[in-house]
Amino acid sequence: MKPVICYGPTVLDLADELLDAYAEVFSAPPWNENEETIRQFAGRLTADARRTGFRTALAQSEAGVDGFATGWLTQAAFPADRGYAQVAAQLGPDRVRELLVGALEIDELAVRPYARGRGTGRALLAEITADAPARRAWLLTSRTATDTVATYHRLGWHEVDPLPGTHNAVVVFLSPHHPGH
Image (cartoon, rainbow, N blue to C red):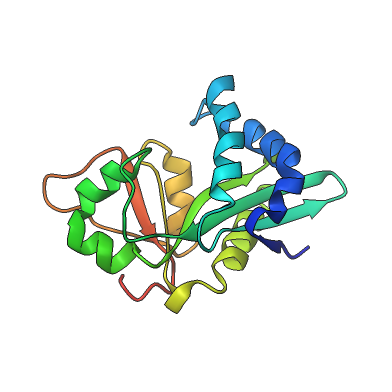
């Protein structure tokens, strides 16, 4: 089944199902998130749904939400919380502005274990990035999540080389058709 896109806060009608999927995916290795960080996702989702260009791609079946991806347009005031400081350190201000500002940022991608290996993640990424501005989309992930890093490579996403001496815990990827790779 082809994923569907929800724009803005309309996805909050499914917040409980998204939280359940998020918890199932991110409480497991390599993420090992605890109950508090899982609860924080619910608060982030409510706030993120108000961001410029916010959208959610949903893969659903009779079992419920099989997976989802969330994203929004990266603003010029690049954040410093979560992993953003590490992204800025790796890329420097000029490359952040050139590659990421104004692009679609994929914030979360979660596919339940039973839905993996069937193209669900690929379909979610394709659907959420289909209308990315000038085909520009990006995401970051943990360098220690080696299976996840390998999956993005396999799906055609391009790892951005860090500036010399700035290698850290995150990997920044540009979408397959991003003009900056």
